[in-house]
Image 1 (cartoon, one colour):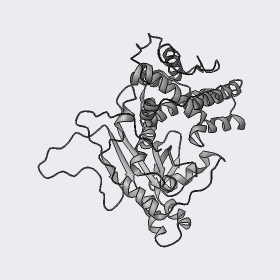
Image 2 (cartoon, one colour; image 1 turned 135 degrees about the vertical axis):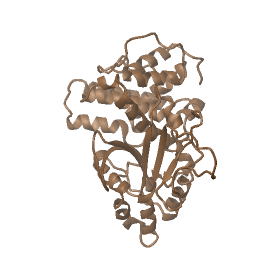
Image 3 (tube, one colour; image 1 turned 60 degrees about the vertical axis):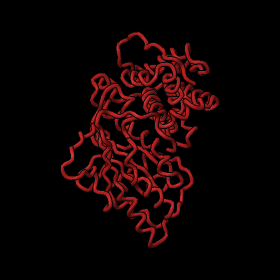
Image 4 (cartoon, one colour; image 1 turned 90 degrees about the horizontal axis):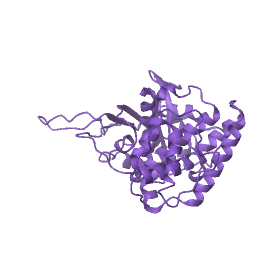
Length: 365
């Protein structure tokens, strides 16, 4: 979560509204009396700092290591605590930032107002979505969870994780304190894309035909599509400037092919299958084989077909993403051929009737 988003996209008269749960920020945008009222944007991003503010207040009085409970006592901290078990048993060394580092980051995050956090992410969807995204900035949680989305059901002050709940974003300021707030905007757009994508898929008739209980290999397909485009939303500008590291692409695709071979024979969610699915999207950045291979495929599709290719992939599902990548090979130099286990892989998740491929655009780097 340390890179800027792909490009700017500004709907007519749309303004970003940020609501901050803090005394100094009351939410919305203040206007002088008599001024025109701006059109409400289709997406409202509400950022709640109560959990990390509680951690900061505690850390001013005692050792920061003893302040996790202050964050856990807030709604956002409660969600982060509930989400710990969803990361499995894989961990990394705990981070113990100074209070000053966390305070500096939070101060920068509270200044997020000029940046349009959601419009870049929304531009990758086939159609407009609308709603309010809740973001909780916390001072507790799993050591692998610097930024993530979880589905939550709210019942008064209590929250529970629920498959059909509201998708909310959790940002752990303790794990992000080493990064300037401005550098986190790309990561924010990544997480916002996940929420917008879920809104889109829940409402789209074609996606309602997707498997309600996907087999492990189908779940991996969905992860590759979703995480691949989300990672591209974040890292796309850098990839278009510098190209995709070929060694990382080959490594991730080889791991993906191996995972497909292991997952295809059975529909059972064995411990081994769960471990493969977890490793696909968690861990250090370049080791998340599902996310990285998906980002590489999205990068190839974007170079050949632009953002329309990724919109088409979101509209039709993961099979379309791989189909467009295979087509991109003919016009984009330097792309790595997909392993045979991956090329043409659909898992039954092909949501659109066949139609002619989009015309390739002039290839960038």
